[in-house]
Length: 410
Ligand SMILES: Cc1cc2nc3c(=O)[nH]c(=O)nc-3n(C[C@H](O)[C@H](O)[C@H](O)COP(=O)(O)OP(=O)(O)OC[C@H]3O[C@@H](n4cnc5c(N)ncnc54)[C@H](O)[C@@H]3O)c2cc1C
Image 1: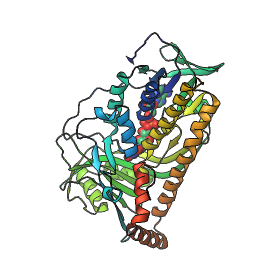
Image 2: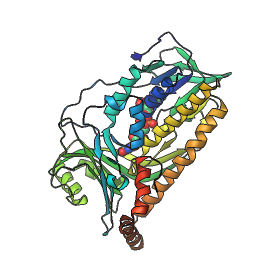
Image 3: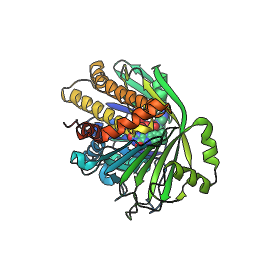
Image 4: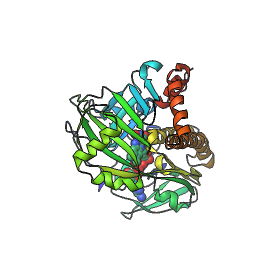
């Protein structure tokens, strides 16, 4: 068991966070920076690793400018392996069933890039590193919360090592299948797309030159997200390929050469020959939204509150925005000598985040339906729409700004 502790004898905290994934650790660092005594309980042990050139892990995230700025302000981004966060300055999107094409370029909004693609593994290890150097933050890894209850104005938790901890508020950052959310009896709304995303890293003959690609197939989107290692190599991309449930196993079982042929046919040979790929994984494509983000002395954050279709590339960015909003509310309460777990504080958090996240999910749902259809009228309409949009910088610019996570520019 690992303990990253600045006061290991302590049992009373301001904040208890269950789940030390990307969102939980970021929330913990921000909350401790605001002067709140913070405890994180994470079931997994951290894996100390060193990057190896040419070796990539399959789970990656597209990190928006807004998320990067926040992570930089907290001293996290600086711990990422040099050159690994791959800046992408252009995104090309097209429809396989027509002529519709749209391109987004960082120049259109006077930005250096549209975001970065980074393997989750390195982001988590940078967060761990910074957590270890944040005063007022204790991380208990390899442990879970066995039981928790409200005791007056406190949350009391019994951990798997038979110790107890108390805090003013509990933040559930334990992911899409949140045990804390379930134990609190908080209802969710779920959409199952009856599809899975196939994820792997592929190598291609031509360099991606910092361009992200997304093609809409009749089954759903296929994304090629550019990767880069310490040597600056640009001939690897992470793919997320949406496939109907009944076709997934066939693609996973295909011999590698046949899989690469099928993939490159779908991708229209955009980066030249695909020369290799890593083992393939698949994830179910579902959206989930909790009807409430708060309960007495409890807040849901990140995937515990909402899980998006990866087409958006927004999941962890929305989680980071939740975390930043909640930490800011805690800070505000703390400065005024108020209780960070009060209903007033938690309501302010829910008000800020729930509508925003729901709007992002509704947009994804609409997009998915439009592009999931092979009805000729829908195909014609979306191709026409994409081509028109591509010619309208005044409409495109706000879209790019939204993707960057910054206020809309006019
Ligand atoms: C195929 C795919 C591609 C994606 N691509 C992108 C992308 O490009 N960009 C993007 O922004 N998002 C993407 N996402 C979504 C993104 O991965 C999630 O939004 C993000 O991981 C959520 O982070 P989280 O910390 O909220 O939850 P999680 O990453 O699920 O972390 C939860 C943590 O809680 C711990 N935990 C769980 N239960 C307990 C317990 N009982 N006690 C203690 N600890 C516990 C877990 O071990 C884990 O560390 C993608 C998702 C998928 C499936």
